Image (cartoon, rainbow, N blue to C red):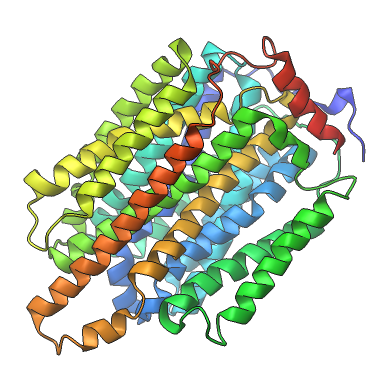
Length: 498
């Protein structure tokens, strides 16, 4: 179906809403999505004991959510454009809440993994609908920069707050409450959405369901292969066939999508240099961030002997620094450009990961972990904001849903793939290594410390890769969009014809 100018943005059937109230509501919805990426990390050991999850299967608690979310975000963005952003956001919140209720009640690992996948699909509807609503509510320039500054800062804080809340809930009422806590929030958001949010639509074209199925299947097989390689090796019969199948599906998606009249992703949108570079950097940045929280939580609990609540509270200074960094970054991007702010943030993150890769098995929190956490947190704030802003520069209002879907896809796929890669490298043959210790506690601690050092080194390399990608970002101020940056706007709009 072709789009028309009339359906570029469908007006709300209700009176104009307050932009501040809209931003607050959208931030709450997005906070819940980002929170769920990291809230399980602190609870992983408790889940493992309670549901008897094998060590090699433990990453599925994280990757089942991230892979489904990342694989379905583009479909979610097209559904929001087609059927209305508020409506799709409500459906996503409803699915997320139901999956949280069932997941918290699960009695076996398989059901838990399935519920995490459903949570991921619900989030895949919420995230692009929320971000595209934000971008059409606030015009490009200072107003949008400030809104995206709050948005990006909240994303960084949520990643850290997740482990704090995860520790408090796991140590208190139990790990199941990291799921149950979502239920009343999601229910309230579903009810309040029509009162707070205007309805809007983007393009009128059809969404590409077959394309979404192919790319989701390909990404799921890829992550499955990476996880299985941890225990069985890359050349094993369990890994090699699925790895080849994943490659075939992903390549098929790329080839077929370029020939469709209504592709899930019109690839010409990647001609917009800021969008292209921001998405590429985001993949590697989020790969490092998710790996950091996953392995830092395990390091504190399994090596340093921290309780879940102590592990969660250890991240509080990091959350504060992320908030400070986001606030400063949103101002700097408006005055200078996204590129120098992003490079500074990624540089700080690489320093934090480097320090963690040197933390000893008897590391002190004040002298070893705290400096690394605060530096990494500041870097997160300085990175999230310019990446979000750069991904929207020069994108037309009609393409808001697609741009939101792309940046959210890059975030979630980066996290899922980064964890899979880091776990594949760091946890390879871990059972054999632990067996070789003969149960000696000192040797076990030394082995685990070495394993986590390898994981942090992988994260360090991922951050440096993101930094190299960020060097390609054009030196454009955030307000240089459709109004003043005509060429960029034309490139974004030209993707519509794909």
